[in-house]
Image 1 (tube, rainbow, N blue to C red):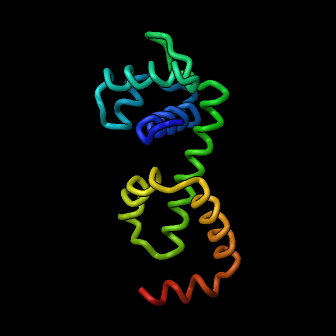
Image 2: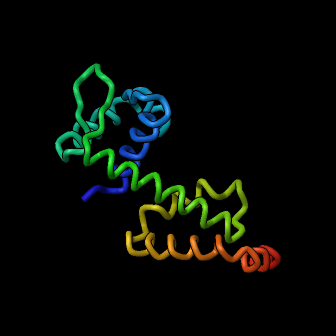
Length: 134
């Protein structure tokens, strides 16, 4: 099972691959604001765990398992952002709040939030009432 730190790395590698088609140690280090040596250590661990194919001096490649999990992690992040927007959290707080809570929720809780977001998106009147409470 992936730790919160592993999840962050997988998510950022996935984002780089989706956005640029390539993920390099230096890119991941910059986006996570860590040293390249920290990325290398984590990528070696992710390689042992079957999430990443790592060869020194080459771009990072997610395995099928890594791609599937990266997609799931990105969806969780986007869902939580969407949820916080719906309930009226100030935009400048959303990213930090999501980063603070995303690793502390079970996948069951994420499934229930997904159901709630889908329901709220269908009930615009309720969302407006909720926003009037601010």
